Length: 215
Image (cartoon, rainbow, N blue to C red; front, side):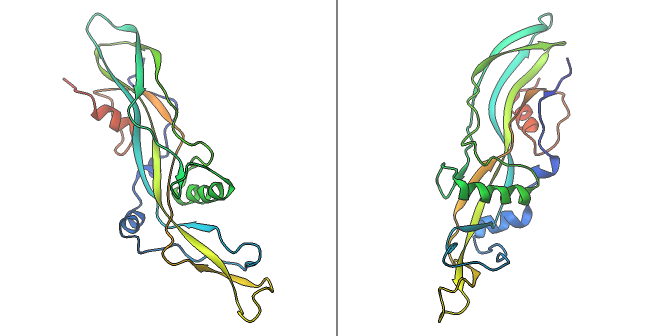
């Protein structure tokens, strides 16, 4: 068996923290570009959200270290349990309604990969797994994902002419001070890694290997 078994890896580029976004996330002073196009204040006065910041980072959700002693290679059964859970939230709510779903579609465009817009949290993965190891050493069985979190900006539809507020002709305006927070994540990754497995920086695989006490 190869040292590494991965069912899915996230896009490497997605694991880099977006520098400008991280800065804005910390200060809360920047906001997204004003949406283009007309709007109708009678229909869509509130509830348009744009992505202001997006911080991307790998998260290790499940982990178990295994030591394969010399002369004991072969099939090993072990139980892997959760070490951290990640959730999809919008404005402190785990309810993913249509409005939040549309916002997370914009997050996907921002970060370059598809984030969850219906799944409320990472899976509870406490189960027995059977693995085959071809040589002794220290290994980690793991599961993880790529978390995205940041802030949104809210926009309101205002009439262009306040003398005729009900004519349906409006424009989008930034709602000052409205910065709902959000959190979501990529598809989950699971696999095994050994002490001598080459790993890419900023990945779930690296986090799993770093927890090993390699001799």
